[in-house]
Image (cartoon, rainbow, N blue to C red; front, side):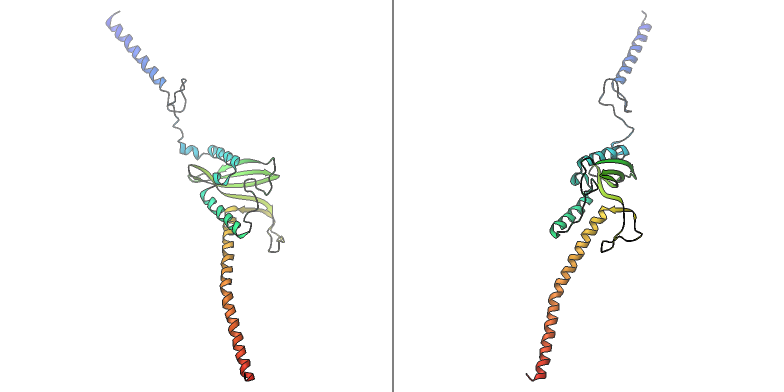
Length: 233
């Protein structure tokens, strides 16, 4: 073998070794190499993008409905409102909510179920999920979601049902039949405000009672003086 042929064979061998080393390193497009190289990663979608996909939110909704726990599943804003309303309810003795928002009802069917119909309006911080809750009957529920603490939490519950509006005596208002929406955050805010307004009115009334008593007492004294003057006493 000539020196030139030997150099040619060495060059071919070097190129083969380089090719093998490149295969061993795997690729960075997400298609893992046959040897299971742990360095193989996908650059097609960053973790942040993945968490804001409909697929990720769908999995998060499944987790939320398996837990059905306010502390673990609801946003900080919602929890602050709910806990405030609950505190007022315990102190005031009034009822601020009369159904379970996870099953959309007061009673729970042993065979209740949930189905995610769609995920839409996804932004960096918010999204909406439309659910069908079957608890004795089908109930449409829309969840407002917020991205915080590294994942998605329920920020509000919207319930939809067929019904009527009612007056102060509990009678249905003619012509008010149709699909109704209940916004739970607004319900909580209204409850907190109504109790605060009532307590404020009661406080004002408590202040006015002594004033009223003083006015009555003064009027009685004046009347006695007039009677005494008239009778010469």
